[in-house]
Image (cartoon, rainbow, N blue to C red):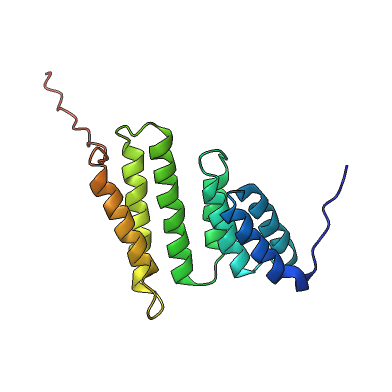
Length: 166
């Protein structure tokens, strides 16, 4: 069997650029591989973690492990803002991937996942750096999605009727 070879720490900036290029070419698997190579050399590389989260969420429709791995990578980010923001990105992208995969039906999970994304974006907004409104932009995108897809709603709470015997 063949073994992977480590990249040099000096090649990380170029590798990050290649990962971004592969994402733009709609080849997230290739971008993911590059991010993992970077993280093997520099496990705390924040840019590689962000690219990894994005490449994993690009693969949500086809890769079952993508969401949990994106969430795990978001948990490794140093900044409270980035942890909340990228966790929100993962929830938002998971919701939209499910919505598009399931034929636009009434999916309570899609609604709930978008609400989780909104909660994350709200948390990120509270600790965002000055002049950074990315979390607000994502909040607004989620609200617009929910507004455009009124069939998405929370699951009705089941009311249990009291037992009236004896």
